[in-house]
Image (cartoon, rainbow, N blue to C red):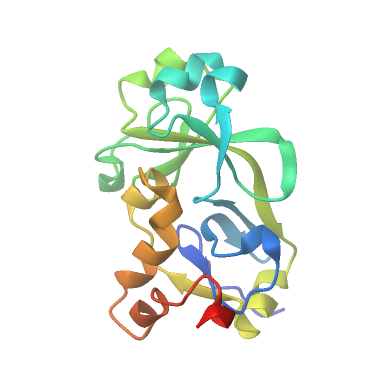
Length: 190
């Protein structure tokens, strides 16, 4: 079996050609990527559900907007917490209840008492469900041109305007991808 180069911590940005409505203009943060498959969360799908409605203790720590995000089409009845720890990229000792994914970005143990992490958290997002791919499935989608792979920035996790994230991530690229940010929502209207 060929070795898979890990894309953990990178962003998958849906190309305009991606036909799956679950991922239309989606920006996915890959939390895990190896030969066994891939797992990520969609960063730009806020729901109308307040964090306090499902995880009361975590509501005060959630960034704006303080709603649950739909992390993807898999396991919508489960929750994942993704948080940025300021200085967490410097190899500092990770606080209890937080596991580094990439740089300052990590997963929060939502079973832990929120007070345990309150002082360390820079921002927190709660996701219902996740995006998952079996072995080789994501690689096939990349070959088919369904996704752009770009570097993530800690601010992507807690963007205060998630509805603009797809365009903002593309716009900051230093190549032809910056032009894709101007792609119309409905090209048939052009």
